[in-house]
Image (cartoon, rainbow, N blue to C red):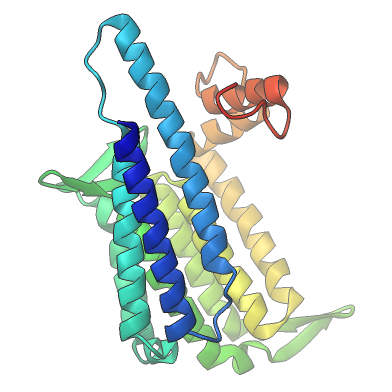
Length: 289
């Protein structure tokens, strides 16, 4: 077992080294630190997953249960597949500006991927959220791909319209405000985020989509007014969702009182509190948790 894990870890390390070489040759002006940092975090995650696999095998042995399949193998497989696709993308797409020609195609594709789990046949609800689709034995979250395509759409749109979005029409004190007609795209993304929250009951993806657009909008225009308007829309959306949808209300209640027996859904928060109480911010060390 140890040899198998060691072999796969060394293979992953070699693949990461090849990927780093591809980055330096195919994209010499790219930031050389991003991939090594991501690789470090990923390998630490693999080590932690393997540690949990070992603990699971020990429990199964003590209870006389069948030996479970280690999760680390599936994680290494997905990591290898991701790295291969990453290198192919860098090799085929030498100039990322070519993506801008299909800005709205990526936007439409992102919306389709985002709402695939809502479909009644292939969409699957797990723990109250509809994030997964199942096709035969294959199951995955299309929203993860939607985040990439929507990021491309946001970037392409804002590059094309950043000068228009930077125009100032009114002021409140020293704070310049954008023109009223330019607020439309922000409102549309806000509505899209609300639809994700309503249809899929996924607060995280909803906030991520809206937050990503706001960050890119601020980077493109440099206008703090956009951040202020987005904050107001975020507060308004949160208030409306709280009063209109029970699952959002439960999220707020759990955040306010995770130990409450009324909701019974504060398990993860309570576990994190116990973890911090036992090990502090930096933990007690691997294998000692």
